[in-house]
Image (cartoon, rainbow over all chains, first blue to last red; front, side):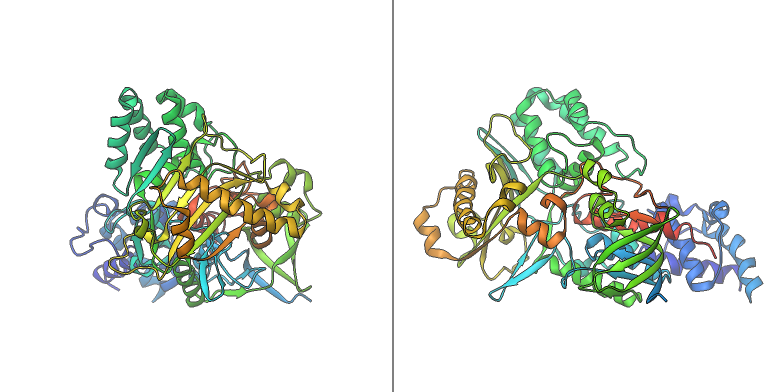
Amino acid sequence: MTKDECRKLVIDIISDIAPDEDLTTVKPEVRLRDQLQLDSMDFLDIVMELRKRHGIEVPEADYTQLASLDSCADYLTPKFQAKA
Amino acid sequence: MKDSHYDAAIIGAGMSGLAAGIRLAHFGKKVCIFERHNAPGGLNSFYSLAGRKFDVGLHAMTNYVPPGVKGTPLGKLLRQLRIEREEFALCPQKRSRIAFRDCDLKFTNDFAVLDAEVVAKFPAQADGWRALVQLVRTYDDVSLDAKTVSAREVVARHITDPLLTDMLFCPVMYYGSAQERDMEFGQFVIMFKALFLEGFARPLDGVRVIIRVLLEKFRQAGGERRMKCGVAGIVEEQGMVAVLKLDDGTEVTADHVISSVGFPETMRLCQPEHRAEAEANTGALSFVETISVYKKAPAAWGWGDDTIIFFNDSERFDYSRAQELVDPRSGVICFPNNFDYAGAQLPEGLFRVTCLANYAKWTALPEPEYQTAKAHWMGEMQRSARRFLPQVSDATLTADLVTTDMFTPRTIRKFTGHLNGAIYGAPRKVRDGRTHLSNLYLCGTDQGFLGIIGAMLSGISMANYHILQKSGT
């Protein structure tokens, strides 16, 4: 799993949670909240879908690590690699 | 030996129970919904009579916003339940009115229309009105731990004209208040947004479209549903639900139980029963509704512009338990034909009128008198409502009439289980859904998000808050 692949997985999840958002122009270094209309319910769903689809656990204390696509990749890629 | 064990058991297959079920099943919980009736939908269901399908409850779905508007309850609900907007096939209203004896306020799904009406007809109240709207827009109405504030008190700080005050409270109360004469300000805000800042819509085929979507999502997610199998008892042990006793005599267990049947109704299911708590928070407001079916659409008589009309002719609008069988002074008219169905139309004309009613008086009537009272009030309610519509002769309406039906507080009690036939449930809502048992939560009407979108969001919020957010591996 590369960081690029990880970013793509997160984008896939967001596109299922929020199909009404345009994800083609999302800047990976900018906070997701600042470019998309995502609320706390949506962030909970990102966490829940990571668990459901990939068996990845994100403890509540680490939710801030999911702020942008880049921070998601930094945080999640080692978790995916550890599972592989 | 128990028959089954579930991660979560849900009591009631109404909008809130189904929504909670979809969330839990989607995230892999073993979940079962127990429903006493053979039809799902609860307070918002439908029935067939002589080959015709009638909606109950739903006049219009509130909280409608056009595609592209984000951050409102409708959008949140669609995302949370993974529903495509098109699946609900919502058609927006044409126009609605608040019609009082000497004043009329029109509103549409464009808030600017109501804003202009208020400013034009109550110029001295314009500043207060704008300040109230600003407060409503910024108020955190979905907070699960908000403190209780009287809506009358808050509104009075901004609006001083009693007529305007009553005209604003009339629709907001009729579409969701379980409390007489006043309501909690958070509830007022939820309804104000749902009715005025957002708006009305309806699928051409009515509420069954929405129920069908929910059932299908629940099934796809792997949820189990047991119809004609209600929960007859919630057995407590050491501060928790130990066992659920079902109507058919069997028992099931569950880690979590979500009850959508109402606060006092849930307290009375508990074993031992919590009768005192139930009695201290049981609603008193019930309603009666007449439905007339005509050969022609209402537009044929010049009734084609209004979708919903909230009417009142008393000096002060009095939202309280009816003293007689029915209080015809105020009410709600609904013309399901008058939505913008983009060229399509319902096969017949429908005229519905809803008024406040007295549960005790209706249930005390022996059968022959019950039928006589229904016939009498059918006429009286229509007469009262027609004062607020362009004039049409009795002869014209009678000539086009196909059939009528009517539901009373007795019908409501029978089909929803709500004590006192109280559609909007208990006067004091339980926002966080907690009960005296650590694994029993409330959702739906008595959790306090109102309307059918509110009901679904209630199920979602309670499933998220009490179960999904807490279950790590």
